[in-house]
Amino acid sequence: MTRRRQTTKNIFRWPLWLGVLTVVGLASALFGNDHWDALSWIALAIPLAVLGWKASRAH
Amino acid sequence: MTARSVKWWSLVHKWTSLVCTLFLLMLCITGLPLIFHDEIDDLFKSEATARELPTDTPQAPLSRLVDAAKARYPQRYIQVLGWDDDRANVVNVFSSATPEAPPGQRFLKLSFDSRTAELIGEDAQQDGLMRAIRIFHRDMFLGLPGELVLGFMGLLFVAAIVSGVVLYAPFMRRLEFGAVRRAGARRVKWLDLHNLIGAVTLVWLAAVGVTGVINTISLPLFSAWRAQVMPDLIAPHLGKPPLAKLADVDDVVAAARQALDGNTPTSIVFPTEARFGTPRHFIVWTKGTTPITSRLFTPAMLDAETGQLVTARGLPWYLRALQVSRPLHFGDYGGLPLKIIWALLDLAAIVVLASGVYLWLGKRKAPRAARVPDRPAVAATSALRP
Image (cartoon, rainbow over all chains, first blue to last red; front, side, top):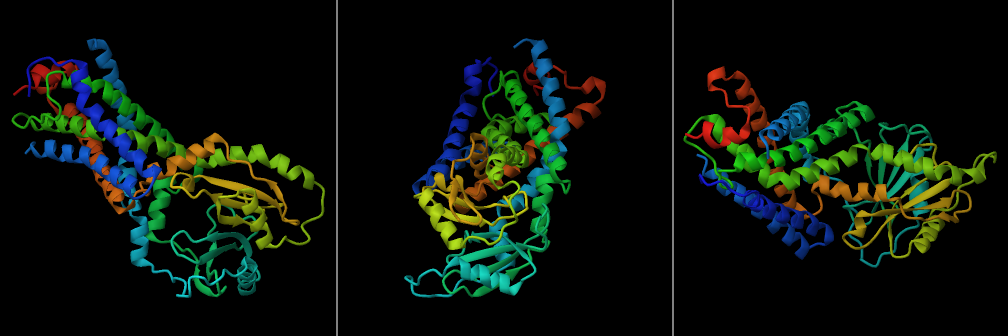
């Protein structure tokens, strides 16, 4: 937690990168099988892992 | 952002969310088993597979399969013949009890071994739980009006996502990404979780939301295309006597293959009074062979009597968009791991929706003094700070 005022750029940095990963994950499985599917799983698993990590610190 | 615009966006977020939340919760919950419908179907219903034969066994002429289907149920109308997606060397012949085959009427599915023309399965496609869930998810048993209502709810959901993104900035001004304040009120913790999960799943929520909306207008889109192409297709046949005799189905497929070289036929719509076909043509649906083009279906129209090619133009852009939006909604295009990811994201969406309702209820119930101020910029920075 920070008391400093963050710039809008800072605020959206994480959501933006996780969003880019999601787009890569959604698109890559459309482009092909095998490697493309694996790329898709990894790209989509990272935001989920970040979510799990951050949320687990709520308790 | 000024306090006024924050207030305005809060109102947008509140009302768009409130109206669509119950519908979206229903869609998320019914959607969860639908993600795995292939696996669940396999679990409860094992379909007969084709016999083991040497790999170079030639395919039987399709006309033999059609004749066998006719011989078995002479009073039924053969509407569609389709190569099975999951079972090798299996071709299904679908027939209806009436020539019009109105939407909702179930087809009888006869499955044949495509090499021996032997009947290996018969499926009346009766009501099952998964079928009921699918229809409820699509239109709440209300047909097209239900579908359009859900489409409108999807649009509201997209508006809620956009307003949520706008509001994210003032709420997070003094919080690090993913910060969940545990020490204070429960409401604060859930506000932070709502923001965190929403921020992480945002793109997926938007993708599944928008593609879901596109799916809800698939019937009108197909009707629009039909209205566009049918007059030209039917004009030469106006005033002519009824069909005397159908062209040989194998000739029809050969002509379609030649016209759409490189594509694989997936199904044949027989000349029909039903809305999905035309009374004077065979429609051979084909798909490409690469991972992307295998999602893009292109029809060839062939004359019902002569079997000659009439047209094999590609579909208009809006039907292409519909075809691409389907896998992105269903999550069925990247194997089981992708389906599991889809399910986890779906569960995350349920938490976002439920926490949104909780936050709204909590705000309404709280006594005036303890109320969180309406301006979230203040709420997130000072008033709620433990």
